[in-house]
Image 1: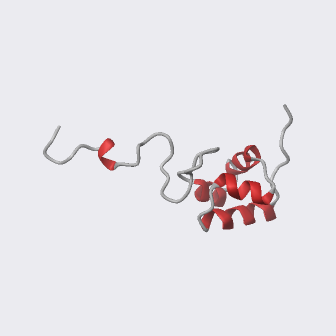
Image 2: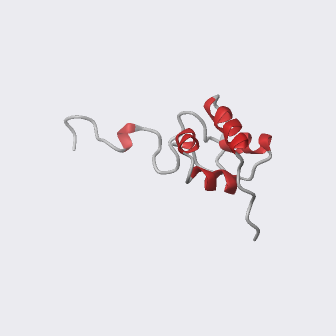
Image 3: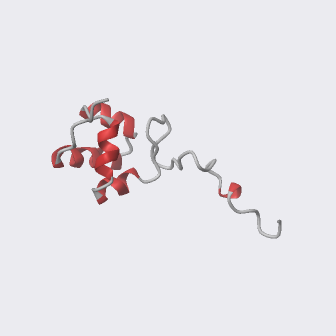
Length: 86
C-alpha cells in the first residue's frame, strides 16, 4: 500500500471552497484529482478543512450539507424522546 501525496495549500483552498458550495467530499476530491486518504490526513492538521468536512463521511453518496453521518438517522427524535414521554 502506498501513501498518497500530501495536499498542498492551494489544493486545500480549492477543496474547502468546493465543500462550502455544497459539493460532496467524493465529488470535490475527484474533480480536483485528490485521493480521499490525503483529504482526511490533511484534515487532521488543517482547521478550515476540518470544519468544512464536519458532518460528512468518506465514500458516502449522501455526504453533503445536512448529512449527519452514519451515527444518527437524521431525526432528533431518535436521540431525544418527545417531552412528557419516557
